[in-house]
Amino acid sequence: MRLTVITPTADILGEPAEPDIISQKDSQLIYGEQFDVYESHGAYVYGQSFLDGYKGYVERDQLVRDTAATNYIVKARATHLYPVPSFKSRPLLSLSFMSRLNVEEKSENGFRFIDDGSWVFEDHITEINNFKMPEDLAQTATIYLNTPYLFGGRSTFGIDCSGIVQQCILAHGNACPVRNSCNQEGSFGTKVELKDIQRNDVVFFKGHVGIMMDDEYLLNATARHMTTVIEKLSDVEKAYEGGITHIARL
Image 1: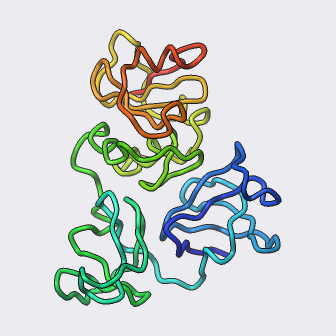
Image 2: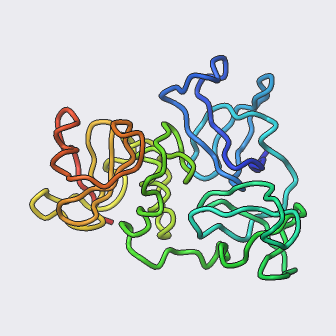
């Protein structure tokens, strides 16, 4: 059974018996993404993300069935859903970049109607079939600059290092089905030597990953600062035992 996320984010838990503790197996779904359910587990369901196959437990109340296929995606860093087509109405939900929606033709005051009865600002969304970020990977990564660090996060409300890499690669129309940095390493692109490093290269360390802004600075979401920052590659290299393990170029 395939269900759709109806909350801004929905955590995929590795261990539902301890929901207040983030495990090494945790990840996250964002609004409009789908989750294939295999079995019920109390207030949770067990299954896997349709997008990247990540398996775990999700709260049943954050999912709904029998929804129409999503046809639009949020291209802004974040947006709101409104009960009526007016910016003066109180928002119902806040949505992250790359949230998915089923948008209808009905429009009013620059807003588009959504099948659940809410409205979204038209300039913040685009058709999924036409969605591809126009700038380079590094430019897309800056959407997440200053986003709080959240282990397992994949949204502009909270994200981790591999979440940024996955979301940015997907936003540029490339496949990035794997979620964790250890699995991402070697799964895409061509290998690059450190002496040839440049903007948009993806740099891996033991348990960490980031995107180069140029040949010297790296954007990464890090628990060292609990946020997403741009810092010198040499400083990041010193912070992780073993230094750089792999460099990939799309």
